[in-house]
Amino acid sequence: MKWPARRMATQANKSFGMYEAAARLEAEGADIIHLEVGRPSEDTPVHIKEAAKQALDDGIVHYGDLQGTGTLRKALADKLRRDNCLTFGADEILITTGLTQASFAAFMAGIDHGDEVIVLDPYYPQHNSKIALVGGQVVTVRMSAGNGFRPDPAVLEAAITERSKMLVLINPGNPAGTVLTREELEAIADIATRHDLIVLSDEVYELIVYDDHEHISIASLPGMSERTITLGAFTKAYSMDGWRMGYAAAKPEFIQQMQLVTLNSTTHPCVFAQEGALAAIVGPQEPMLAMVAEDRRRRDLTVERLNAMPGISCRSPQGGIYAFPDFSSLSMSSEALVTGILEEAHVALESGSFYGESGQGHLRVCFGSEPYARVAEAMDRLERYVSRFASARKTS
Ligand SMILES: Cc1ncc(COP(=O)(O)O)c(C=O)c1O
Image 1 (tube, protein in one colour):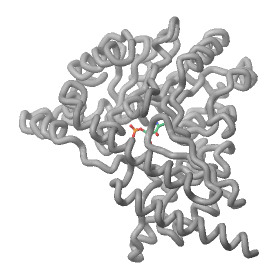
Image 2 (tube, rainbow, N blue to C red):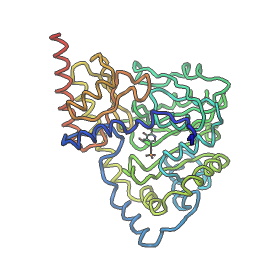
Image 3 (cartoon, protein in one colour):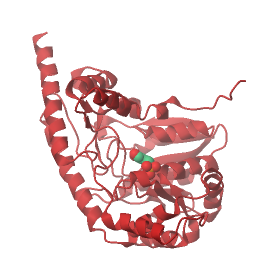
Image 4 (cartoon, rainbow, N blue to C red):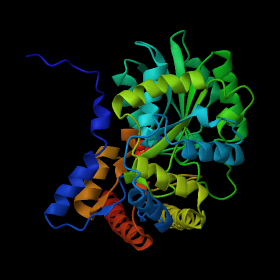
C-alpha cells in the first residue's frame, strides 16, 4: 500500500518541538521555565467557566447550529460594530474551533492549486503550513529588524505577480509585536485593492495592545470589508486556549464557502464551549483587562531586563505576548542559542528563525505564559547564561 503524500510543510510539525525538548528535560527532573508556547498563564475567568458549566447542566449537549449559535454570532456582530467599526450581520459570522480552524477554512475556500499567498516574514509558521497543505504557494516578503519589522509597501508590492491571490496580515503581530498604524493599513489596503487580493487578517491578539497603540481592523477601511476575512478568537486575552473557540467575519458568499470546510471537518464547534465564549464577550470585561494589565507588567520587566544584558537589544512590543530580542551580537545561530539556553539555563524559548529568515539572530520570548515571578527568574537565568557567554568571548 502506498499512502498518498500530502504537501505537509514540516514547519508546523515542529511547532511543539521546543515544548517537547523542554518536556524531556522536565521528565528528568529539570525545573524548566516555559517561555516558548504562546499560552496564557492564567486560568479562564470564573464567570466564563460557570456559563459553560450551566450550559452542561441545562442539557446543552446536542448538535447545534452549523454556523455557530445564533446568540454568539449576534453578540459578536455587536462587538465587531462597537469595538472594530465593522458592520457584519450575524449571518456573516462563522464560529470555528479556534482561529486555527478559521484560517484553515479561509485558505481552503480562497486558494486554488498554485495560487500565491503573500506572507510577511517574520510570520506565524502555522499559516504557511496550511497554505502548503491546500496547494497554495507561500511568497514571503521580508521585513527588516532595522525598522522594527514594519511592512514596507514598496517591497510588498514588488512581490505581487499575476498568481497572487491572498495577503496574510497578523495584527497585532506574532512574533514581532507590531501594531499596524492606520497609515500602514491604508497603504496595504491600497495595494490589495489595486491587485484584487483577498486579505486574511489574523487579529487573535486584538485585545492585547499596550500604551497608546490602537488596534484597527483593516476591514473597517473604505472598501475593505468586501475583500477581507477578519479572524478572531477567545484564545489569548480571555485565556481560553484549550477551549478552541474562534470566529471569522466576511461577506456571506465567503462565509458559506468556509462553512463547507468547517461542517465537513467538525460539523460545528462544541456547543457548551460556545456558551462560555458568549459569557466572555457579554459578561464583565474586568478579568480580561486585569490579565492584559499583567501582560503589560511582564512585558515591561522582560524588555527592561533583556536590554540590560550585554549585547542584547529588544524593542518594546506594541501588542501581543512576545518579545523578539536581537541576540545577533552573540554570533550564534538562533537555533544553537535556543538549545544552549534550554539545556544550560533551563529556559524554553523559540528560535527567531522558526518565524522566517528575517528572524535569524532573534529569539521569541513569550512573557505571557508564566507568572511574573517565574518570568523574572527566567530573566535572571538568561542574564547568567548571556554574561558567561560574553565573558568567554572576551577571554578567547
Ligand atoms: C498569530 C496567531 N494566529 C493564530 C493562533 C492560533 O489561535 P487558536 O489557538 O485560537 O487556534 C496563534 C496562537 O499562537 C497565533 O499566534
